[in-house]
Each structure stands twice: as C-alpha cells, then as structure tokens.
Image 1: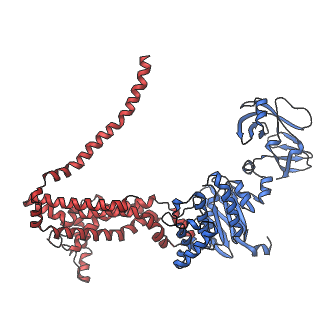
Image 2: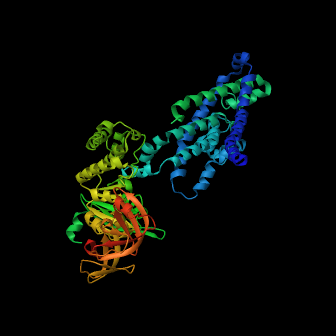
Image 3: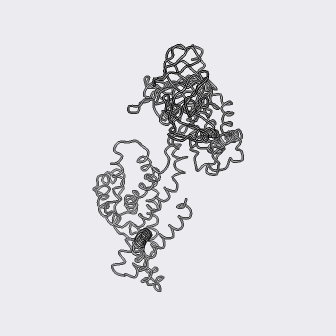
Length: 272
Length: 358
C-alpha cells in the first residue's frame, strides 16, 4: 500500500523539481552578466565625475563615436538590407558560400579585420593604392577610416538579423503582389520593407551598438588620433593607462548612452 | 472544336507540368463569363494548375492563351511574367498585405501599375462599396472578419480588371456559418464579372453553386468534366461518387444484368451492353437480419465495418461483395442491433440502380 502510493508521488515531485535547475543556472548567469555593471556603478568616483568629465574633453570623443557609429549604421542599412534580401530570396548558386563570406567579420577577431582592411584600403593596399592615385583618397588614420572599420565589423549583425526576419516572412506575399501587377522592386519597397521594419530596426540597433563599441579594427586601421579617429572605446583604454578613475567615468558615459538608445528605441520599434 | 468556339474562348489552356514521376496534364477551355471549378482531392494538382495559369509556375509543355494572347508556351519559347498577365488570383488565406488598410490593399494593383494615388483610391472605394465594405475601408486586415477579408481579397483581385480570375479554395478558411452567405455573395460577383473564372475547390457544394462547368482532377489527370448536375448525378470515379454521397460500382452489362468487377451479378432494369457504371443511392439499400424474400431482386450478405451518425441518418459501411455505403434510420440501427461486425443482408430494387456506359 505504502509502496504503490509513494511511487507516483515521488515521480510528481521529481517532475516539479526539474525547472529549478534551469532557474538556478539562469540566476548564476544573470549575476555573471550584471556584476561587472554593478562594480562599475559601485566603484565609480561619483563625487569627482564633473571634474573628470571637464578635464578629459569627453564631448569630442563622444561626438566622434556617435557620428561614426550612426554613419556606419546607415551604410550597413544601404548595403546590408539588399545583401540580406539576395541571401534570403534569390535562387543563386553558392549562396551558402556568399553568406559565410558576408558574415565572416562576425567570427574574425577585429584586430585581424583591421589588418585585412589595411591590406585592402591602405596606402599600399590592393584598392587603397588605386584610390590614392586616381582619386587622392586615403582612408587609413582618418575619420572615414573609422567609419569603414566600424561598418566592416558591424554590418554582418544587420545582415544576419534582417535575413532571419526575411525568412520569417511568407514569401507568398511576393506572389500575391506579382499577380496584382507589381514588379519585384515595387513589391520590395511597398510590401516587403514595411513588413520587415521591426526586423530591420532590431538589426540596426545591434549594428549601431556594435559600431559604437568597436575597438580592435578601428585602432588597427584608423589609429587613435584625438579629434579625428579616437572614439570613446579608444579614449577609455587610453585613460586606463594613466588615470583609472577617468576610464571608469568614461565607461559610465558609454553605458548611459547605450542604455538610453536601447530604451528609447524599444518603445517605438522593437516591440511589435 | 468548331471555329466559333475558338473565337469565343477567353481562356485556352493545356497545362503540362512534370514534378518527378508525377505529371499534371489538364486542358481548359473557358468562354467569357464562364466559371469552371477544378475539383479534386489534395495533391491532385489543382493548385499547381492555378499557379501555372497565374505565372507562378512555368509549364513544361502545352500552352496558355488568354484573350488571344499567349502567356506561356514552352514549345514556342513564349512566357509572360505574372505581373504582366491580366490574371487575378485570390489566395486561400487571402494574403492581404498586413501593414495596409483594406482600401490600400484594393488600390495596390492599380498603384503598382502606375495609376495615380487619388485615382487608385477612388477606384478602391468603388470596389469596396460593391462588396459592401465601405465602412471597413480604413481597417487593417487583422481587424477584418474572415468573410470581410475574403471580400477585400476579391475586390483587390478584380480592381486590376483581369481577364482571368483564379480563386484558390475561396471558402476553405471560413467557418461553416459564414461560408453559406459568402458563397452566395461570391456567386453574385462572379455573375457580374465578364472575364473567365477558375475556382479550385475540394468542396462539391462550391462547385455546384459557383461553377457552370466542373473539371474533376485526380492524380494530375482530368477524370471527369461536364455540367455540375451531370457530374453529381453520374460520377465516373469513386472519389466523385463519395463527394456526392453515392455508391459507384463498375462492371460489364449483358442483357438485363450487370456482372460487377468483383464477380457478383446484379439485376438491372435497363437493357445495356458493354462496360458500365452502376450508381446506388445509400438510402435505396435495405438492411435485413436474414435473407430477404419478395420483390427486391438483388440481395447479398455483408459485414458492417463502421456505423456512424451523419445528420439525421446513420451511415453504414458494409463489406460484401459488393462493398457499399448504406443510410438507415437510427430506429433501424436499434431494431436490428447494428454494430461493427454485424452480419446482415443487403438488398436493392433493380429499379433503384442507375446504369450508364463507361
């Protein structure tokens, strides 16, 4: 009697316990992600923040970061959305290879990406040499160079998320538009793009955040010249060498900007 | 086919599509104002035929001619893209563009063809009025009921003035309650439409109400074609017979009898010779506990394999030979204690058999 009753009870308890393991692991993971942020907030020299901000000319680096990250995001939108559309909708051979190549910067260490950019667009680079001779253009160690480095590293984030959103769309809407007399480009502009807007917005935010934080490719390809190529992450790293408190405060500024943008966009775009 | 028939044909199509070992091979000839229903089970090739007509699937052979213009002819290397065809398609789940109002959905085709915004909107408003949805013009698709969405989809397809209208299972996405009224409505709009219409459906009632010609497709081939009433009365395949609720048996007629393909013999009223179909209404078959005596001239033993309530009648599936469906009253089921496995005798009068040549 006792045995027959105990078995189903124990089974029921065991079934109920299972999620606890997941919750505990998730809690540890959340702590791991949050503790650095808490550390930043706890150890920040709050009293000397105004003084440090004034002394370090934050606005120059911050404005450069915001400007270059925004331009990089716009470039990524102009070229990345069509790339995503081709990857998702065109029946082309070697599509898997093309996708792998386009998203290579996702897995490539940014420093290596910077070296690769130098070899391509540097003064002696494959295209850079021609750019310099024919157009008098030189990208390395200039503000446009920062934009190029950021676009190179961040665009794959946009491509991946927009292609995912495109694959989630019912391709038969394209067929419906075609039977109504719409060309493929008209359909893309008036049917696909509006349905894709949330996916594009999410991809653009990811792309922008990645561009804002870009360090390795930027310092390799564009260097760290105050006013022209020294973005906030470079400024933070430099400050860490001689004034750790300044590095903390500058990191706080970056954190505040990122959170502000995420919160501001979430209400308008990311919840659909 | 006479010359006058060719001249008045709005749609002249011979659709041949290969897909692995499977082949679709269907001929369609429609006059202006004509409504043809493509009836068939799932996987028969109805949707492929529709896609070929719309240009969403290329023909492997054959041809499509609409109002004298060749739309697809692989032999001659001719092909017109879907956006350049005067063909409207209403999808089974309508596929209204979710981010546009009902009005912008209806105006879409005209806008895509370069018509000015104000003109296209005015035309859309007229179409919405015609389908009785003026008040819903500014609603998004998700704010429309199933029946309303169906009417918007129809207005959207008709607004581009197609010469051929294609309807893919137009009522399948609706619940039974709205289906009847939407079907009647659809019939009215099709009557007003001066182009040709092809309706794909697996519901024989759609075909009977909407179409003036029925083409039954099974496994990519036309198995029967004709007036809806003829198809319903004289089915030529088991699929059609089951759709219209009739028993269909095949055999060879000799004198006043038919020897069925399963070997059993039936006495019939008609004098007929050669390959024939025999149709028996399920309600014309009597069920008895023992071998019946008297006037019915055909009787045979059978075992019941299913007993199901259908409306006010009970439908029995009986294994003979011949195998038939039988409709009886619930009282008969109780009286004879009919259940799965029951051994019974079935009988049918010779005059209740409908016999026609294969």
